[in-house]
Length: 593
Image (tube, rainbow, N blue to C red):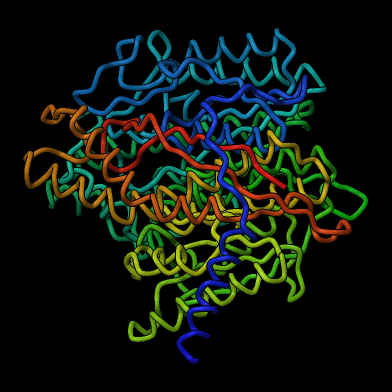
């Protein structure tokens, strides 16, 4: 009798997970016809051509009813050493043609802009931090200043424009494998950048003093002499020249925005990979914070410029905030739960704040207030405080997800554990949770980025549900954002990438960070990628196809739900010809009620 009960319980659980018996619908061809509303176009200059800056931004925008107008990829592409160059004969984007492209969008009547300053003034994120530096021909930095000021003035001339400018605080070291950068050089510059610096305050916190502070420790230590003794002076000097140039360009933008006529501009600055130490970024961050603008409203002062941890999520945050502002978002309540016990410290060596501080800053950006009874449940898995309790933390997390499912409460899941649970947490979630019910998931990178990514998607989806703006096209774009994040994290990062890394290094003797150094058979790698993903994604896709999702908010009356259709993946690619990230097309079947 006990065996019969157990079998019945297991069968019942499968029925519940199957979304009340919804039938799978055959995935449709991709891409699907655009379904954005007329006049809801955003002119977007990406940071670079990685998936987080292109297709995933497209998905998020489309889930909110927007269409993105993006320049040709060659104009913003980054090429690593040995890879085919762009049409402009360089490894970076074509800044002058991008300026012209933006002006063409303005002439065509566009009134929404999200523009990456690193792309516009350097040709991409990697180029902006290059130890070799980069200047526009025929005018150097001065020409970049002129182009920036002219472009901003042109966009400011139309009072109907809303312009988001995305900038970054330069990370500690340049990129390996770009313009000859080596791992040894990276390690030397990062170690130099991580050294504590003299703290500047008040009137001493200015451009000239900051650039001089690069060479001085907190107690007057002469870092210039130290690097000369270590034989790293020239390497450090090249990096600092690029650092000074970038900070100067950021200042020019802030100085321009402080003038009358730029009230419809928004500046969002992200802090790139940092350090747990009191490092070279310290005075730069303090300086840029001084230039952030606020405006007076009925409820007091309100920030319109922000400086937050994370760079690869800047486009997500700006798209989501643009939608919130346009739809009259009045804020919401969020309940944050941590599982693992280490939320009071940075999640990895590239974060400089505890998880709780990063979370608090992002909640403020989205006007979310923490509350026990909330509109949105945010579940965060941290590294385990006690390694012997991994199973306990994992079970607590899954229990919380199941509680949200039972209560039909929107939930965001953030994996900030940096792989310390292995694949066991992914396997447990696939077997015991309804993955397609989550409104957002992120876990691919460091905590600063995954927080902004998950909250951007989660809050945007919550607002759509509250506003009643959802359409079938919006639902389908939202589903792609969730499927893309879950499948890449669970299956590619968790399993397939590790297999590829081992194959490239051990069998081919190649470099997994650049398939052109030495040249590898990319067709062979794509075949292995497709085969690995077909195997590893199968159970996760079955879970998604059995899932239901909220199509209207539970606080707007009766909750409405729909069921996922079929999910199929195709057209795998390595955007940067390296194994770190992949791109893929996601085909979806029709949703059912």
